[in-house]
Length: 397
Image (tube, rainbow, N blue to C red; front, top):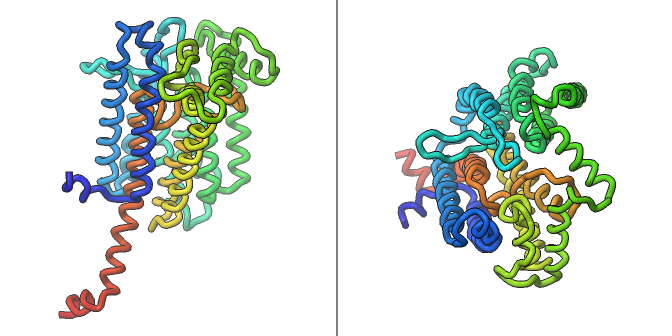
């Protein structure tokens, strides 16, 4: 244990935040899985507890392994991984099928182990590192729009187009995060406006095509439109079942909550252990528990910004923001959906919701952030060593 602790590098507060969220996640996941236990298994929730533990254990192993890799290596890895990501997305698109009426074309089955893997989540991390690499490369020179189309925007749009048919919310979030990162990276605003306009045009053409050929992508466009319409009209319909149950759970929680494991709406709320777990948290731990979770994610955002500011290279600054901001942004969206400030998106609460891919890719992103902060610590130690008179004398001798 001491050997592992000595090998842990990077921002200690980031480690503490991640550990805090992971430890807390066992309580709401174990509680909210009771409904799934009685409908999909023998009635025991212990198997879901063990499954979540294994997901977190593997996630922390990924985070530990990634944070030990010098972050400069991720520049080259992003180029190598981009074609692999595109291939995986194509395979996922053609492998998808329907499970109990729900489109499952966002997952791919891993051979031998028989586990499902959401490739869009992995693609998001790789894409943000790739964009950060390109932006750091052009920092010292003036870039024209035409020369950035092939190396930057072509991979971005290919990834988004392959994700869009099965997962509009993820594609929209990725596009927004790429826009934010390119803006921070100093990409000309007039070019960004062109990209935004192009994105809107592509989305419009996609919707028209899907409407004209509904057999190609059954129910997807109708699902998006119905969610937006239900959110905007403010009327309660059968399609609002999830969000209405979530609001009942939040209202029931009041200030202090019903107590751990005492949620009632977990028995009626679909996806209570993943997409709507924040509603269960508020029902069991009240407004106080919900605010604590919000503060922890804001604390994570603060540490991400601090690490980016102190990074020793432009790539380090951009990659921290590129992989870190989507984590916090996704958390805010998940919480906003639960309180009906945002249409239903299907986004999980990072490090708390059940689900292997979400946990693993979040841990991978945090591992990259820790790698950048570890490099900063290493440079700081070297600077302190050089300022030590004994070290200077030793070097002179």
